[in-house]
Amino acid sequence: PDTLQNESARSRMMILASASSASVQVSWTQTARLGEKVTLLEDQTPFVLSSGACDGCPDRAISVDSKQTFQTFEGFGGAFTQASAVNWRKLNATGQAELIRAYFADPADGGLGYTLCRVPINSCDFSPESYTFDDVEGDVALEHFDSTVQKDVDLGMIDMILAAEAAVEARGESHGVRGLKLKLLASPWSPPAWMKLPMKGVYGDPGEGIRTMTGSAKPFGLDPDYQASWANYFGKWLAAYKARGVDSLWAVTVQNEPEASPGWESCLWTPE
Image 1: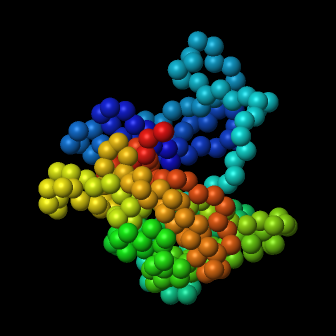
Image 2: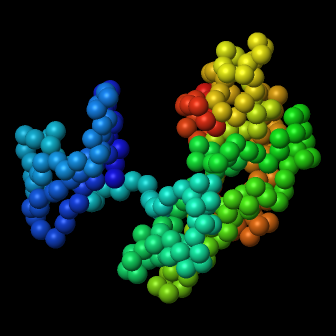
């Protein structure tokens, strides 16, 4: 599904088509919001896709040049979140195994073949509560950092990731893909509140501003005095996950949605 956006509507379109013929009728369903009107999974008028030249219709053509290549796709996948982990842990062993199989098994075996997934550093908007692994204010040296990442263990994040890692490796072995491994991309939604600049004029502000994970000061949220501490936090988090047996951490980003400050964990960044 692709998300289509304009000034007045947000739509989700699911296109189901077959590439087995030169011309195919496409059936599609849309969920959209237009002002106060919401349509859910509403069938739309089918249209026809045809291959070949389309002179004079650039606004209705998809041009594919298979001879010109750009970057390589590292993989496809989804996100591990605390909410998904909590629900995964509620399943019995059979249900847990089936969910992992459905996402990470090879498509030839009925799975989606996920190989690249995202994991949040600290809590995110899909967490039961806001939390970090060092909430001791002013702990510049991170002496109180929880190197056991126990909160993620308790929520089921670690076990779910380990199960996915094992599934991807087993998939590689059974399909002759040597060295196939899950790749994890880690992103923070927010640093600990004490590392952020105070927000003023928000709920709970006593007058001089309040430091909080949910929301961000503008134009940037991280307190410059804690830049080094926040950088070191990344290293400690990565080491803690590795100590828990997570072997698939592949990359990190500085921030999830660095230009957004909604009412949940966030931290604005500028290019500078």
